Length: 340
Image 1: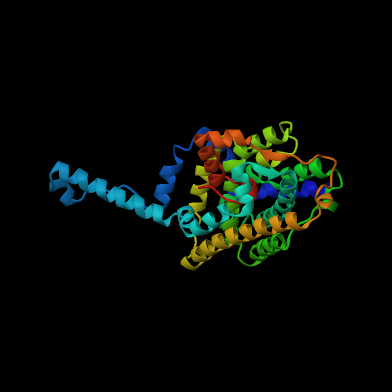
Image 2 (image 1 turned 45 degrees about the vertical axis):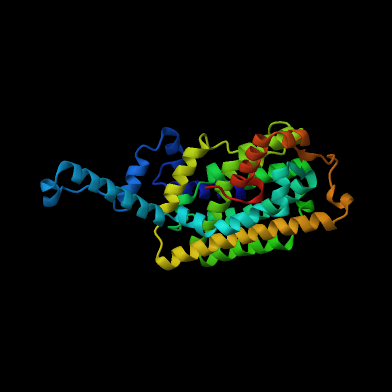
């Protein structure tokens, strides 16, 4: 109990340090009318007095030139945004991840309870490593701007879900594949050697969780017959009242991180690695499901059910199929795909 109290104080201290003594999480609730303006100023977009040419050119020419310059400057700023750069370099990996067997199971609405439970086990280990390293590096200049433990931390939520499905002795029943262990090892390694690389992993995981949590949470609740919060804590973000506004804030904070060219390239390479590690986890989990005896996977008294949408609805409604595919492709919270 004493250790938990100390940890809480440390998190609070880091969070306040990272946000200038105020909770950034409260800012997005009031709207971010000044956020984009401040960000633009930080990136060098400032107003200046009109030049002699501007004073002598016809009015229409001046307005057209200003419009072109503004458009060009905005495009240059977007090209330099770290979030947009990550999106571009991981595009191919994103497509590959969408076509893993586990991903396809989500798209078909046919995820079994053993799949979901094994996935939670891997999420537990991954978030344990990620959040411990984020906590330890919360004062690092690259980590501090994106450190939102009160809003985004997932470890406690995953623990609650594991306790629901496996019982009070769930820690003894957690089983993860080799790919999950490699993923965790990498997170520990960069936490010690290259804390700025944590930006890539935090962005990949947290924004994906936040984007798709509500969608997949509702599907799981209805399909598996679960009560509102039991077994579905992972999908809930009680500290975030507006996911879209919070994601805007998060991206802005991440794009403001100052990196050398070498560090930026390293973060982009790490984002690709994060996807590859997630893909390997998906593939290993599927192999575990195919090779393990059914009675070994069914370690609790909860009956095996399917996270399944009735086939008649899927077959008869092209719109439903399109929406379900879109939700999964964009969100895919539980299986580690981010959304932009």
